Image (cartoon, rainbow, N blue to C red; front, side, top):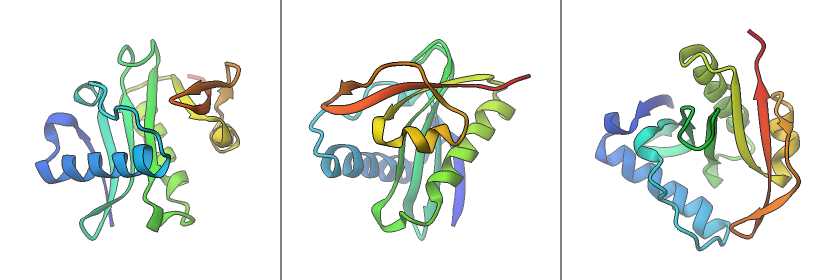
Length: 149
């Protein structure tokens, strides 16, 4: 069980395939959301993932400022179904926030969260900054985390 963080060009073909397959499995198939998963932002992002026995157990995409928003961002947060209820989501988000704040020195992080997860993200200090809206047919809210220097 190993955590990795890689820029797109540092990922092996197998890692890239595994990450994209898991994202499609979760965001397209499991959530019944028939919308394009590839958006061109992967090339400019960092990819944080946990690998267990050759498969992706948890993943998130870390976007530098200017890729999605003026602020840095975290997206495509997922835990594979077989690994849920093991606190991997919390560990994943802690690692993502640590990387963005300590390695990239970002003080503001904006996310687009599924509405049912607002308490989860709120527990890390994120605050809701929008009304609920539909994104690909799923209720979402925008949230922001501002770290004090």
